[in-house]
Amino acid sequence: MFRKMRRNKQEMTPEESMAVLEKGTSGVLAVIGDEDYPYAVPLSYVYDAEAAKLYFHCAVSGHKLDAVKKNPKVSFCVIDKDQIVPQEYTTYYRSVIIFGRIRVIEDEAERAAAAEKLGLKYAPDDTEEHRKDVIRDGLLRMCMLELSIEHMSGKEAVEIKRESEESIK
Image (cartoon, rainbow, N blue to C red):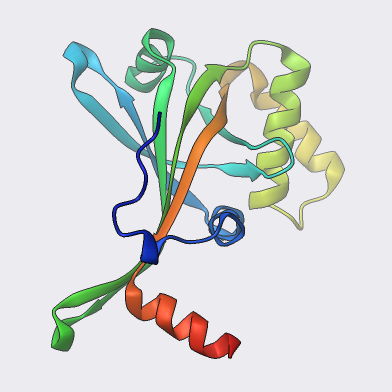
């Protein structure tokens, strides 16, 4: 169903791709928007490797939410490295693209659990009590989205791949 990577020598392993998702703090969610135009929006996220899901928070209304409700098929891209190398006329890059289905989390306990995951990622030094207070106070004003990963591919520049392989030797 999903295409194989054309330049498969640059393909990252699933473990390398998951490491990018763990480390990343933002990415771009692409949905089918109004009049079937693509709509891509940058978002903070948290990755749950065990569940193979990503979680996002957003406002309770808007373009993104309308699009998600209309068509749950989305893609999400995280860029880990983007180093321009002018003398070589190239870019040393590393990125991961996910394809999957997204849903609005309706259940309040499930929403709170997803918000907790985001809180732990972005405010790891906060107290549990304060984090729970913030989540409880904001839960009615925010929507939580869950993206179930159906396909994931990571790709990096040949120079990075070569460097990684040489360091293993």
